[in-house]
Length: 207
Image 1 (tube, rainbow, N blue to C red):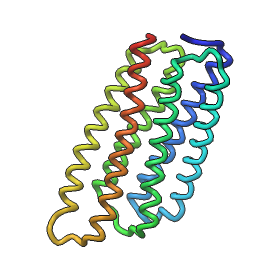
Image 2: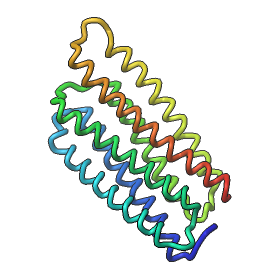
Image 3: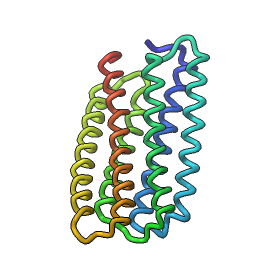
């Protein structure tokens, strides 16, 4: 069900704005992992993006409680905005760890996962732009499939990264630090898949 137009756009605009923050944060995360010296400058900027995402989330949930007729099922609106917020949270967690763990080396497989994450966030952003009115349901469903494929790609890179990390001779402290970073990177792509799954459900229900 689609409610009054002036109310509809508030939710859809919030989805799009939030997704854009994830794209920005994910791109900065790639820069950090390519050159950890960038963490001092970019980690605070990722935190700013995450804080803005939090505000969008809180505003959306507030509007959800104040709106009688919503453009989508209430659970779908709440699920979309909170799952997108999870994506930003985990991106921030990775950037913080690079800074706090005093990471100085780059690991190509970490960069590879982060680049997959950027593509996932870009797909989610595109989906949020197409969501109003569900005028292009087939394209939305294709985006959801692509996000699922990207998550599988990230899983494959993650497994290779962990195998490489646990090779004999690696410093146990370094292993612990990078295992934490890899886990969070992989989790971020999982959260993107969660968003895509909600979008897929919305399309199948309303289109």
